[in-house]
Image (cartoon, one colour):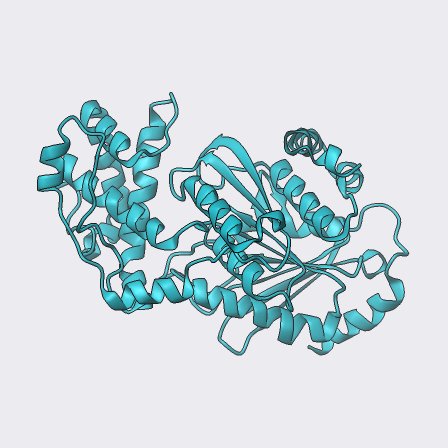
Length: 406
């Protein structure tokens, strides 16, 4: 804290004196009272613009050590902390106090980091929250509930439309997979055996071969789930394995976090197979715990009642957190009377959070534009090196940010 205070005192006298791109000069790590840890990256004090970007990270396996996931702090070979520092912004992130399903913890720990650690020391003028995947939901919930903490937000590839539907998506993928490929995975959709996680690499190979050897069953699985794939055959396995991974690695932790089993398909009607009647008669059925359903409804569902500008970005071919979340969230913002606060940027790519650095920076430029009316496009373009500069320019054109910024 004393170190942060020294930064704040020096920075208050030096903001606005820089010319050219800043460089990252200070990295500070610390602990939060919840047990989370955090990291803060500061640019040169002479060119800090007085603003702060806070990052809410995505899902991390529940049994991994607590720490800010370094692999989520870069995109397309571009370091997010270094890039934001070069643009003049401080950059910070919390690890959250737990891994796995950590929506509630991420929501609280990120706000705590800003309110009780960073702002008392830095007194940042504007605070922007950005998050991806699980962090995208944390960001959206924060944009609805914490206007006193953040000024604007950006949510990437998050389950923001309906979290219960996201839980059911992973469970449905497992029961439909087990129907078409019985016995390949031990256990079932709600009972995960230790061997499934411990031998996942072997199961990945077995599942991939089975999908190749039984193309009709694989095609029906994709059809019933209405899951995105491309004309490239390996994307079938990528889609299936991506969804199954979350069922296998996330179920036990989710049950513990939610106070009960949250997956429910007891009255679901499945369509898209060669014999839908047989599928619906034979598929495994489960009832969710009322406690888990109530917990999801109380703490994991967005309302659409935005209290600040938010930019959402999502790949249209996301096989893990499907794009239909954006459509559902649009309806929520309309019902809540907050539609003007939300800007959605669809990215026509296959893959979960399969963005380029240009996509992300164009979205951030739009966040700042919506918040302050200031355009960052020239600053970002002049800061980036090729090929990231060309990528950013293309992303700006796709989002019509250049027109909006005039």
